[in-house]
Image (cartoon, rainbow, N blue to C red; front, side, top):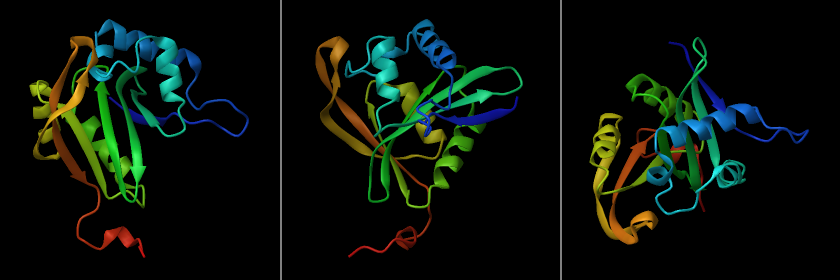
Length: 178
């Protein structure tokens, strides 16, 4: 296995770093694994058009982790809500869970100079996901009641708040505020 991180970004000529066919295959894999509703539990992505629009949103920073040897999709992940050293982190495995792939991605994100903490909000019913989050090095803080809009179930659910420090210490990552 040779995992490679492949950022999805718009180039100056208007093209994207990941070919349309790979994005289409990623959508097909999400559907095949029945992960669309669980990943976008708020109902914001319901079809391939929504998916592409989501990935191309300038405030979303998606990456694919692929196995370069086998041309296999491993993981779709993205950062959102980036502000003052923090961002929301989102993960969706497209193959079996692999700790090395997760650590590789977290190390990649840790190289973003201004990013100090990745924040997660996970529906409390996603017990397997919560176990994976903890194994990956995220710290669990607690649950906020009724914060997750479980669109497909027509209800609100508590969200478990977690975080991952990308920089150790309290030196604010070299950033000056004032």
